[in-house]
Each structure stands twice: as C-alpha cells, then as structure tokens.
Length: 115
Length: 113
Image (cartoon, rainbow over all chains, first blue to last red):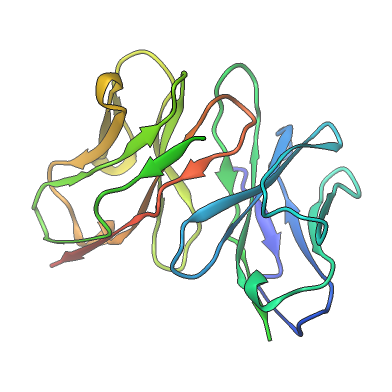
C-alpha cells in the first residue's frame, strides 16, 4: 500500500539555523500538507499546497516558513531561522482531493529538536 | 472558526471493557469527520471517517463511530478493547476536500491485560 514517507526521522539543529524537512507524498495525490505537534499538545495545521502553490496556511506559517515541490516527487518544508519553540514533530500528509471529501494520509513524522 | 473538543484526556480500561471516546465539533456547515489513531512510536493512521450517508460508520479493528448532527458529535466506540488498542486517538474535522484538518487534543487510551 502506498505510504507517505518523510526524512529525516530526527533532526537536531542549533537555534538560528535553517532546516529543510523532506516528504514524498503518495504518487497520485494532488494536495500536500504540513502539520506539527508540539510535545503534549494537539496536531496543528501549518500549510496546504496544490498545483504548485500554497492553497491555505495557518497563523503559525509565518515568513520563517516556506514550502516547495522541487521535483515531481518531493515536498519540502523549510524553516529559515529556527527558534526553540519550533521544536516539534512535523507531519507531512497528502490527499487525492477529488470531490467534496477526501482522506489525508500521514507520514511517520520528523522530530525537530532546536537547541 | 472550527474547533474540536475531546472530552477525555486519558482513559484507562481493562481488556474486554467497552470504550466510548467523546468528540464534539464546532462548525455551522457540512463537515467531514475523522478518527485517527497513533500507536506508540508510529504515525497517524486513519481509523474511520464520515462524509455522508449512514451516520453509523465502521472502521478498522472493530471500531465504529456515530455522527449525531443535532449534537455536533462523532463519538468513537468499541464493544471490547484489547491490550493492542493502547494508543492515542484523535478526532478531526474539515469542511471539504483539500482543506486543513482541525484536530482535537487527543485521548490517550491505556488498556491493561
């Protein structure tokens, strides 16, 4: 069964450094998403991406964040200058987005630790 | 704005006990409803979903959920839990395909054998 994959599984970085989190969505899916889960808190939506542009973003997704689909398979989340509070589990998801309802399938996540 | 409330933060049950996890959402229009499960060390997996039609939906591993529109609820049930059901359970909603999922805070289920 097709799965969403994410790399790396764990990323440790120093405050102020740039990080890029990578995701390979399910191949025939058209919508891609990033969510995050700070330890002990709920899963929060960051951004969705469709047809090579951002379709929706949350208040969390400020100028420090950017997303890109650099080729036909990868979908990346870049944090330009990491802060301590960016430490979280970051989940990528994808969906077919056909019709009025669809299912988002999640990857295993990347645990980002900012020191 | 949409919001999702899960009433139980941590539920502890013995094997074979029945389970009901509450989920209420706040949204005025048509919604799509989901329950996801996260087993220890694993990623979010879809347990079941409701889009339209029969308000009683069945998912994997013997779980079911009932959509009650008048109560804005989508409670998860299982008649007899197993030790392997120990996990975190998340209720989520969105308004239409391709839009943000709004998650509840999650319920941790611990099942003792």
